[in-house]
Length: 409
Image 1 (tube, one colour):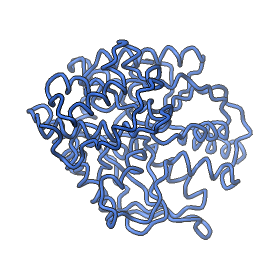
Image 2: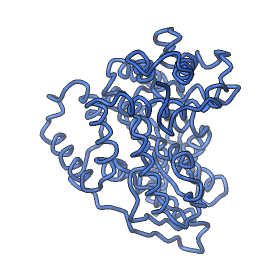
Image 3: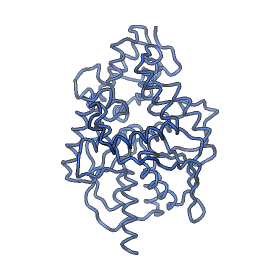
């Protein structure tokens, strides 16, 4: 039957793989099982076999693709620069189109209709806050309990930033369009506050377009390609004429940088996409943001996969932490196991990877942990337990500057 959708992996993308195997030791699932089918090379071979009509999209093919975390650790080490993340999303879009199923349609409803609706997210936020306050997380199904345990304290309702504008004191360096996202606003509002305050202090004008929606990353990762495409087109129109579009969640910024794949070329805006770590580190190194003179001890630096592997952003979080007065310790870049729906669909594998990551953090003897992605933060907090502070690098930096100002006041 072959491929049927416009999102399918192309022959050019798949033929770039030269079967060298350099990706194997960097793949979390291959390291767990040692099976070729659980490696990037094996999955690309399966995708090519479908394209050539050798195999069909059946249970085996779906299992091969669904076991992948989508961490893209294979991409930085690939000599042929195979766009593995792109082919994975395309193959999953084909699985969704050809096989469907109630569970997959339900997940598509969540990633598109729920996450794309501000009213729905307000309702979910209220319900989540109720679960936290009533202690209902303890009786939730085990596959949901870990995620709930890793959440920050959720407010009943968080005022929306959409439609707001923030001006710097002098002439703006540039205009930033800020992505509120789906869960970041109501569940990680402190990250937004820190990001916007630092951008304004660095001289940026920050606008938060009122018509924006979820970036569509989770939809794309799970194969809900049509929904992801609609979200991308919606956001491109909403952001309009800005210099940069900025996100403070690694998964969002990585997906925004891939919008050219999801939106026709003539619809794309002229802006650049930046992760918040990029602009804040640049402002620190350029002298537009200060460096703290106070030493705050060590901080374990966890590199989210979509920051390190998809965007190749590794130095900037370190610059930010050092400017905050911390001595950052890098931990193994292997995926923490969060990976969107993965922790729910494959809780045992996710927990195994999460516990491995926690062991590495504890070996640093740091109780402060920096992570620039909400899913990773929740995964780390749920497995670390009490006594650890897990925050975004820009939060730690903003807190440090506030402490410094209070000391000198």
